[in-house]
Image 1 (cartoon, helix red, strand yellow):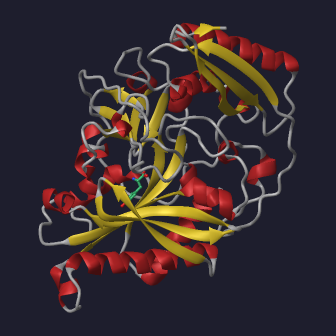
Image 2 (image 1 turned 60 degrees about the horizontal axis):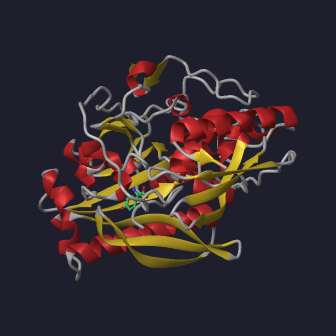
Image 3 (image 1 turned 60 degrees about the vertical axis):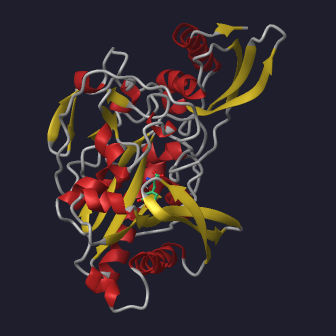
Length: 428
Ligand code: DAH
């Protein structure tokens, strides 16, 4: 377990890593502008992924599909992911993610007027260096693997966390900032995991003048300030809840903590944070400073604040969902419009050495899109010859309509075909 709060346990599987040529096209910043060009998104009711547009504008730069989705062993970005680039749900004032982002901004604006610079339009295509190296993620860390991260080429990824922007913003001279953005992770499929989700990163830098007057050392001073700030934020979002701090590990902070709140009868992990590793500050030319940093997952918090039961709903354009939220209204409870029946299909196969669940999920999502609700391992055994069999149960369910037997069978048939051809497994 390492740094994976928001959506998924990115960092728990063996590492596969490929090396090849590099590409750098969207590695500069554009700063925040609050207006979104349009609140419209693509094709609401289709069950298939819409054919991806061939151009997307990211942080003011136009990028062609061919630069992101390539038939090349160093590239593992499918069309279904390309079609999410540039959607920027966090910049829609009436979307639960935009409402939550603005509520967090309100907290910082009230408590630290004109202090924090906000960035929410930084390009999600970043170098391996900023995503991993600059925040001290070890060279053999599982999060770098091809199985867990989307690589555009061997030196370029779709950011897997907003921490990717820490070091560059520090180098540019920013000392108080919040970065909100879409992040990308290959993962399993269930109601809380989606390969694209949204995070907010916060950083505050202190100078010796800040802590010298206090009785504490620089690190304790920053840690105390961090905890006070984030407890205030949790109260702002959740009201008077019970909280607790858990010691943990992140490569980029020391000490590192997680904040949990007692909400709806359960302890809920809210965010990860800590005192920034001195090495990050040093490399950014800030040897004499200390800083704190935090990262939180917007979907995770929005799901509890708005009672949203399935992470796929954030992507729907069904008015029965979108019309329930309005600007500035944090915590309005979502009323499910209808629950359509699920349909379960089981599939058993002998796995190969290279088989991973993330690869299976990508195949299923590539075919069924948002009609797949869950992919779950329900049986697993190894025979005397050493062959391992897995049985997966796939739950298909639309959030918008009933599915017909015919279309499910069609989907399942395609899934079986592609699982066999792409994953080199033997169906049983
Ligand atoms: N980057 C971490 C993740 O994706 C979250 C995080 C934890 C960010 C601690 C931070 C931090 O800035 O200090 O799970």
